[in-house]
Amino acid sequence: MSDTFTKSMARNIFYGGTVFSFLLFLALTFHTQNALPKRDNRAAITPGVTHGKKLWETNDCIGCHTLLGEGAYFAPELGNVYKRRGPDYIRAWIKAQPTGAPGRRQMPQFNFSEKDLDDLVEFFKYTAEINTSHWPPNIEG
Amino acid sequence: MRYQSQAVAKPYFIAAIGLFIAQILFGLVMGLQYVIGDFLFPAIPFNAARMVHTNLLIVWLLFGFMGAAYYMIPEESEAELYSPKLAMAMFWVFLVVGALTIVGYLAVPYARLAQLSGNDILQTMGREFLEQPLPTKAGIVVVALAFLFNITMTVLRGRKTAISSILLLGLWGLAIFFLFSFYNPTNLVLDKYYWWWVVHLWVEGVWELILGALLAFVLIKVTGVDREVIEKWLYVIITLTLVTGIIGTGHHYYWIGAPEYWQWWGSVFSALEPIPFFAMTVFAFNMVNRRRREHPNRVATLWALGTGVMSFLGAGVWGFLHTLAPVNFYTHGTQITAAHGHMAFYGAYVMVVLTIISYSMPILRGREANSPRAQVVEMWSFWLMSVSMVFITLFLTGAGILQVWLQRMSDTPLPFMVVQDKISIFYWMREWTGVIFFIGLVVYVASFFIKGDERPA
Ligand code: HEM
Ligand code: HEM
Ligand SMILES: [Fe+2]
Image (cartoon, rainbow over all chains, first blue to last red; front, side):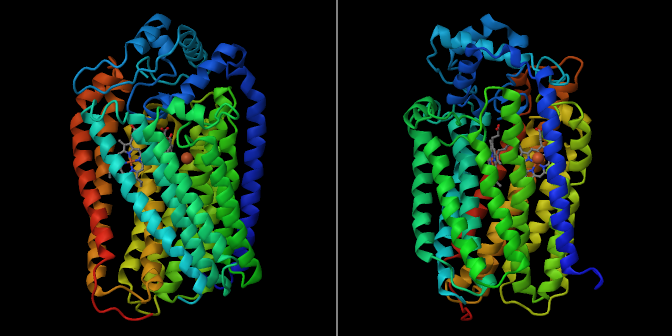
């Protein structure tokens, strides 16, 4: 790089550019915060959903599954599982684990109560109705 | 070693390498569970192995960054470390907290761990990469603050260089953005939105400042090129990093419920993120070509150049591959993501930590460089690990392309588990290549024990 472009010029551009980018990011975040109520299905957040999310987290479901495409890639996407399988199938599935089929990937038994299962299903219904701009591409997730 | 207190870096580096070994072993366990699903079930369920694998990665990289800072800052500041005692105390705190956490993941079911560790006081657990119990998260904050206090005081008392300011900025940023891990609203969209302020703003933001500072430091040492030139480059590179990377966070906001304009902001800015990685590669090669001395530590130079190339491939090329919204629509959350995650983490952060260790460890052990024989062995480990990581990435990419095709693009999409069965050959190949990676790591460790004629420092 030429000598007319000095280190202190480079430094000033760095600080200026960083501050500008961060402020722009904050402005976009502010706008997003205001736009979210129309998209994030917050009206559906009930105590059941809150408890369902807690169960989702305290059993580390994200350690095998994706939720809206984020998480682990070992087991199916669950953001849309409510639409793919429906409430009864979900409850029966969780209760029946592990399958114990030899060589097949295994899901643990979490010993949920009936109320826990209700809340998880409610949580999945809530996530399935978030406006994700038509993702995933099809029902298989 | 120019300053006595630089010696505290050594235990940090040794711990880093030890945890790295454990990380890879758990990677191999998971790799096998991918194809033999009931392997070690229910003793070690996949999600437990994954937490161990990814959290160990983060923790050993943090050990590496801290060790690097303790080594570099006294030399940059031309002053002894403010408090070597504090640094050693924090080493043990961090090691014990880390070890207990891993034991917790493996010894009790996660729900029980959450209950025992006070997750009900403030629910932060059970989110990817941020699975740590509350006391661990608090421990990380305490260690980070004590560490930052220590090195900031050292810098304030001594010479201020661009490298040390950039390193400090990166490390402060690391600690500050980690605070978002304590924010976990029930609203899933908000949860995810700010989760990325830890994850993305780390690896594609402040960590890149740390990466740049470490690389620049080693390049000055091994090439003897003028500091003014290197630091000017460094500023240019990190400007490009943050100007593209901050708004580039938008590439994670396409499908999680955020407004659709993020598809534009995210695609445009993140598509430019490879530029600073490319600049870093050009920078490293340029400086080595213009070198004014032949440093006897040849293998450290090799690691530095390797960091440039592999981070460009992993973060730049594999990142670009899936970052545009219309592509990401199909690849989001598939093996393509895993392929990119592996090569980017390895190429950028694993390699830069191994670069600084390769440069400084011989000096910490009382010599300018290791014997030529030890260096040749270390070079073997460089090639074994790097080439196997390239192949791991290629196999996962192969798996990912088929997965996208069969499960997402086909007119008759197949269910997830059916597709996983069909592509298992790629997972087998990934696992065997992982074994070679592990052999490379063993060779790396062995290189520390090889004697020969060494020049005193
Ligand atoms: C060499 C042997 C390795 C094997 C067999 C292996 C295997 C795996 C597996 C199976 C996963 C879980 C994927 C899933 O969620 O379904 C994973 C995740 C991960 N591994 Fe490794 N790994 C290895 C080495 C490494 C190395 C060297 C690094 C760091 C450079 C690394 C970093 C990661 C990261 C960051 C994730 C999370 C990826 C994501 O969320 O997209 N792994 N690994
Ligand atoms: C050294 C720097 C980088 C590292 C360590 C890194 C690592 C990762 C990891 C681990 C993930 C998976 C996160 C998860 O589990 O959900 C990820 C996702 C992603 N990365 Fe990077 N990355 C880096 C740089 C980049 C760059 C420069 C780009 C773009 C050019 C990029 C584009 C993406 C995209 C689009 C995703 C989301 C994938 C999806 O939708 O599933 N990354 N990255
Ligand atoms: Fe990102």
